[in-house]
Length: 315
Image (cartoon, rainbow, N blue to C red; front, side):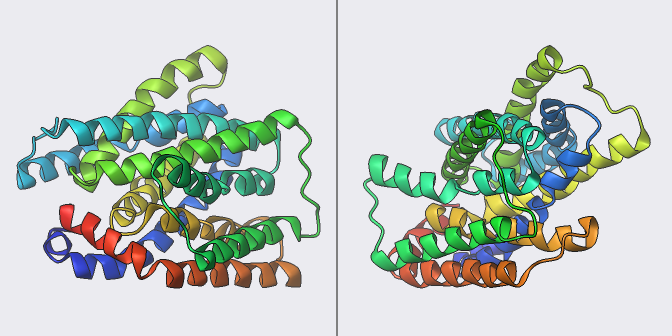
């Protein structure tokens, strides 16, 4: 990471592959949550808490190396954004995990991946961002493909509870805030510092909620611990770290759009793990997701590319 920090152009080139790998790893989140033997909020707590030792070592190393504070960074503005990102991811985990327990993984994943809509809308309303027609076409095509992946299987996607729908939308909006705040925090902090403070803030918020609302808080079997550990290591430590690093080198709206690979990979993983074969319509929908992301990338390459380079230079 040090070499990439010194060469922002090289970092920008590998940011997209890193983002896609992160999206691949977090696509397992829904499966881990479904397999967990503790409650939805407790699962979210262990996801964040078990990652803390690794992020602590990473944050201490980065703080000493870049000289902005060994553990508590001197950049208060970036710290504030990291705290906001921690609050947002805690809200996202509570809403999305409960949504998963009320409806299918497919429906919850679809609702959670409406994030690009809220990122673009927030940028339009609060940051005066403008999106050209090709970007909007690409976003629409990718969203359509994501819907086709989840609704085009042998079983239709049904939202049985209005609450599940609301929780899914809240999760998507919270994740949009998480992406934006995380990108802002990365302008003054290292990835390790951002991930440590996000995880500690989220853990502090999730634990009391879990204790007050759930009976099954601690895993009772080796299988139960393996599930929450796998969720923490794969989805949080590796997956979210890659995403948080990559979004500092890519436009936030495009980053959230690229994360639509999440339902694509979730559908692919469900094939061998759950015996849910992809239908021809779902395969076509997967191609739509890829085509939509490619169009959005082409559209933003000129205008947003310069913004991404600026962000990379500041980190």
